[in-house]
Figure (cartoon, rainbow, N blue to C red):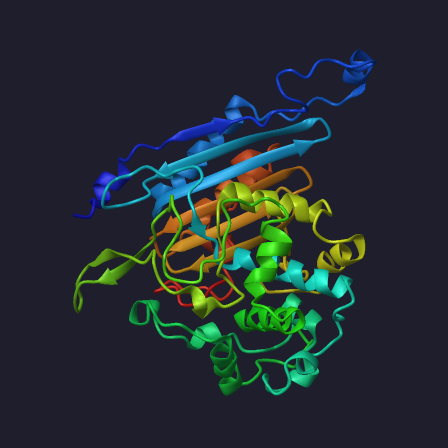
Length: 418
């Protein structure tokens, strides 16, 4: 029997804290000149007890305002090491009341897109393609007007290609339906472009279906293999995978949708954890943990997975959208209310809401098993609590109208993956 809303509201809110060891292991002793180097080295990052309490309180509020469970990790880095906080709140399973695991697996939705962008930019850096190549060059006859849409436009969401996910059936009506990527592109072709290629910026999931297909054309193998070999295995992301079927790896934070129990009746939570992810081919298929997503972004921004030229291409803003997001080739740039500039991505998939936000020294990833119509305001408060340590929540975005929404997201059964 499903746990009641009241029971969820009073579920234990669990705090998990940890510090990442700095420098060597326990037996590492001081070497020659150690005293002098310790005197000159900057102090190691340390999240204060007050910061940890504020972060946990903000995460608890994410659950209070409509998520059945949530997990987040903040890592602060510096020349002398790093420190981290990992928090959980709510329950992983409404039926059993099982608490959230700090290493819970989660459908990361469109946080998947920068993984695919990284692989394509690696291939460009290796001379297998150029960013000025057109879709027609690699996938002849697939996309209507593909001779005018470049790979750079796909990666930066400036192609004008219609986002096929807006025309998809409800996931509850087609939970096990397997979609071919060509079918997804066909949905976009039926509706035609929404603006002249390269003339403006607007989020479209079709862009990254095409990115995945270009990767496959170049490598001669499923794009998932390239993501696995070139990113996941290379960085040792042991909690990250690209499942091909409906099953989710364990431990999992379960997802729910509000479904009406009859005409004019109240809604009840329906479990939507398992469904076939092929409807988000290339755009939102990855399953991961908060720690792995932080590790990926830290490595990406530090130049571990792209060479200098390709990283510069990725982090060059090509255009702004109406919410103030600056689009690079994968990640998006945003300026928080405390004037800290971050690289970030958000995601939206049935039952799940995801965020990853990164400044020069701080890395935050948040997963919400969202159930409310608008789960974003408390998430933004947590983001600003984590990324604006000098101001905390004083400058946090408070009202929904001030909060940038998820592109391509909808409050219903989450057909779009943002």
